[in-house]
Amino acid sequence: MRSVKHSMMRRRRWLPAAFCLLCCLLFSGCTPGATVDSLLKPPSLSKEQQQIYLALQDAVGSGITLQYPRAGTNLSAFTVVDLDNDGEDEALVFYKKTSLTAMENGLRLSVLDQVKGEWMSVCDRPADGTEVERIVISPMGSEDSQNQIFVGYSGVDQSDKSLTVYRYSDSEVQQLFTAAYTMFDVADLDGDQAQELLVLGKLTENTSSSAAMYRLQNGTVKDNGKLDLRTGFTDFSQVQYGRLEDGTTGIYIDGATGPSSLQTEVLHVQGETLAYVLADSDVVAKTNRSVGYLSMDLDEDGSVEIPVQEPFPGYGADSSDQVRLTRWLGVSGSQLQEKMRGYFSLNDGCMFLLPQSWYDKVTAVTDTLTGDIVFCRYDGEMNDHMTELLRYSVAQDTESQEERDTEGYQLLHTRGKASYYMKAAETDDPLAQPWQNLMVRFRFVQ
Image 1 (cartoon, one colour):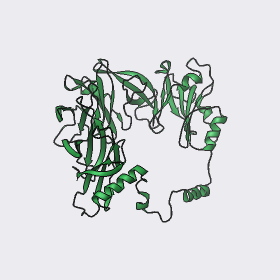
Image 2 (image 1 turned 120 degrees about the vertical axis):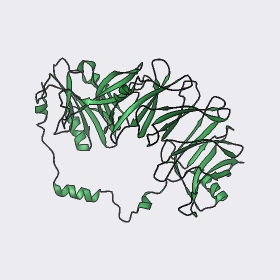
Image 3 (image 1 turned 180 degrees about the vertical axis):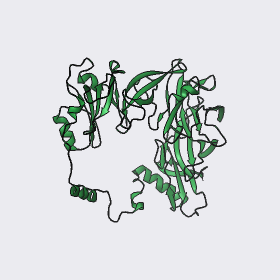
Image 4 (image 1 turned 120 degrees about the horizontal axis):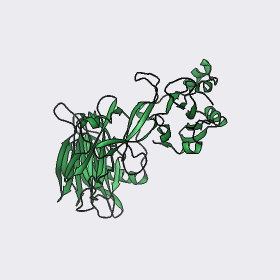
């Protein structure tokens, strides 16, 4: 049997100090003569975008600067989509006039359409904010399939965010709704095959953190009630959706409760309004974990799991070298229930799901020489002679990759210059499993 102590006898590789210094000088990324402005140039425009841009300049003048959304999936200055359900695309563009003073709000929105094959501006109006934070184009409600325009605005410092919903028709942009927000999403919240609007608000001195749902009815955005969240979220990381046991859609809200902590509140639509799923704030508190560990559908079964961490067996609570065990919690009724256990490296985007036979019988340590995570049999005491069962390793350069290949590691995944490996130990320990069984337990996320 191979022990952890034996595996740590590999010799350490090192580079001469002079060579390291030379590499730093040659590959520091500094380019003589480079300026901040030259590094922040907007992306090149496509042929269609150039045509739209020239048509916009023909309408409003050449002294303009295109404005790009700061967040979301649509990060282009040009949103080209069918806005009025006429079967042809329009272009939504935000811009600022360069001739205005710093105190003036120069943000404007323009809609351009194709007339006889040529782009031309058909509507131009002041925007309802200072900076464009996010743009979502989506139908809302069940009355028609026309897209609505959801624009999140913010101040220069990304504070005081406001959401405005527009509808474009007959060459006019009509404002339907506006509200303050911290995060918003457009999704089918109640399973009726129509999209609703979810607006989240963070904790402030005067208000609780909250979630509100809105529907589009008779051309008007209707408020279907606001629910105060039981956790004082100071910001939000994401919203995920997953099937609950009662058939409703679970709304999983990951929010910050401090500089480095995260919790998840789970809601669903009950009747016509939002309602809590988890029993009480004590159950919600069980989702507490470090920032970055977001809820996800880990096993792709349509339900969402919440990752929470604790030390692997054998570590003291204040141990500085502890490797963390992740437990993925699912929602069962109004409670949380463990579905899986494993190792989750946020930096690597790597998850390893422990075989159930390893629960409470296996721990993990870091090989201080190689950086490998080593999974070992745990018999109640941490020592250098624990039986090794599996290694997880990351190689950042060609030399390290060749070394792993030579030593019999199996390649799991590559991302950029990094390669991720595993190696099952050759041992007759009853907990040992073939490498094929262990390899399929690895997952990688971006």
